[in-house]
Length: 403
Image (cartoon, rainbow, N blue to C red; front, side):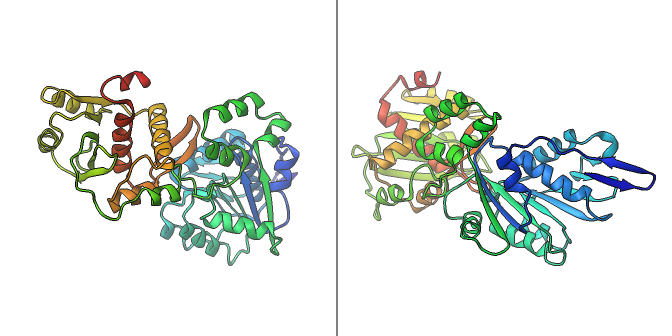
């Protein structure tokens, strides 16, 4: 295709996309819902589609790429910038915009603050990682397309069934007028030669089954990406605190932003202590010495926690440190998930239950990340995981599991 400018004609050749990418992105329906697995080419095809919408538009129109948070929007910004010759675009790295010779502008935005998305007239939009974008942001984006009747392509991994993207995909799949539904899975990318079958097989051998199904097969989990399972979380919950003596402790350390959270387990694997606070390190150390005494404890020694644990070990002989890394956190959380599914312990703190229910996994470029959603904490979950790990392995030897 070509774009005419005063005194010159710009010729554009679309980058190679495999047939299912083309079918999913380039169609006449106003609403395109694409459930896609990791590395199946959803971002590349979305970049191509939105760039073409801008390049072939009338002068001065606005187009949006919206991701859950700014770092994800920045990834798409940089990828599109690399793919377009310098003489055909102007970059603003502060505002994350790309301006074309026809003065059409693509804005790369975060969906983290829905109120910031109202007010503009948008002529086409890609919503990236739509299953992780807030429903209020989708409402705001939809209003920006009202006057223009602009098309939108919603792309993202499957993440459970309890989100607006999943609901819209089901409407599109059922043939709602003006909507089209597509699914891109790892097998499609392997067949097209853009993903290695060995890599998929390796992921299957390393990831929990429910994670692999969502990230590589686009099959939703019932619990919205929660690795523990809502049913297990509920069935392990005791309405009344047992009030018994703790025998083993897990501690997640924090000073002022997050919480220092202490979990104590009794002889019957019940959470008999669940306390959290924020305060100076001296106060925290004194409280931990008093609470733990001569009982075994596994304490977060990541970053600033390392010298705290060293100080505690001078007074508490049964304290050990645990450094959280991506790998060690995945392993310890999978252990906690197994304990929950086996009903291996009981707890009664509603604050802990809320954290367990919010906890989720997400796929990153370096692997699977277990964490609380943005704006939430996982201090209690980490403390519980540490206590359970200590209970399973007994005194000593735990650090050898993680190096």
